[in-house]
Amino acid sequence: MEKVIVIVGPTAVGKTALSVQLAKEVNGEIISGDSMQVYRQLDIGTAKVTPAEMQDIPHHLLDICELTEMYSVAEFQKQARQKITEITKRGHIPIVVGGTGLYIQALLYDFKLGSSTSVTPEQEKIQHELAVLEQTHTPEEIWQQLQACDPLAAKTIHVNNTRKVLRALEVYRTTGESIVAPKENPVALYDYFLIGLNTDRHVLYERINIRVEQMMQQGLEQEARQLLAYPQAHAWQGIGYKEFIPYFQAQQTQEETIDAIKMSSRRYAKRQLTWFRNRLSPHWFDLVRHPEQYETIKKQVQHWMEETI
Image 1 (cartoon, rainbow, N blue to C red):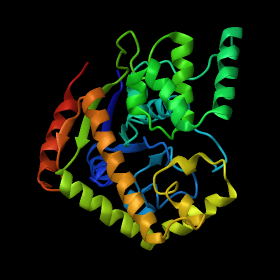
Image 2 (image 1 turned 90 degrees about the vertical axis):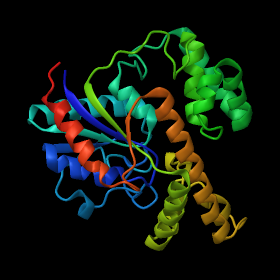
Image 3 (image 1 turned 180 degrees about the vertical axis):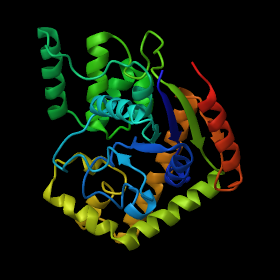
Image 4 (image 1 turned 120 degrees about the horizontal axis):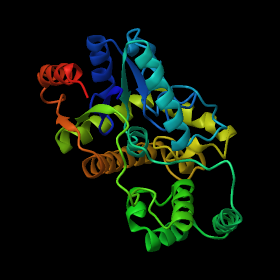
């Protein structure tokens, strides 16, 4: 069974720095597990690792999509598994880093995702009904339908993320099962060591606020403004971009926009932590307040690497 190091946690807790540091220790290559960092031109708002931060460590699944393209968890699952195989064959250790919980879970376990090669008449009917639903109902009304039949999925999918809500409805209506809770317990496909980073909530929220201010100084508004040329871009659903819509429509001030991004980021961090605690079981560390814990991480990883399955 292939060995994989996985680093998860909310935004602004040091996942990028830890991944590079560990990669140097274990001869690793890094795979991004973030749903927005796949897009070219979205660097600031996604907190994408910079060339300087990479420190010559190979990084994968960054900048692989145009703004006009859609990217799904099924595509990530397929591509990341391929990268894990390639990296392992080179004698290196894959290190998956990200905060998108569904992506990480779908990668590590044998979840069946994506559409099959053939679509049954019943599936076509369901897809047509959902397409009509999207045209005739508000995002909240669509989400309420998911809440009624699959509250577990509704709890993890934001009310405004209509694409994922519709996908969850399609899965439920097709299989009778929740998209986030398969009937059979999924089987782990890798011998993985899962590291979770977190810190005190007040410290985390302050770090998030500071990061948003830094993003604005780096040109986040200009980065978001380029999306105006792509009104259907999936990136508009991302935090740090969607909050600019009222601002670009002269419905709120820049200061209000910054406050909205901070609030959305803090709420997302809370949802991320809830997901990882409920769906996965990481080894938790706080490198923000206790950087000396890195030595513990290194020892535990070295011990894990010496184990055989």
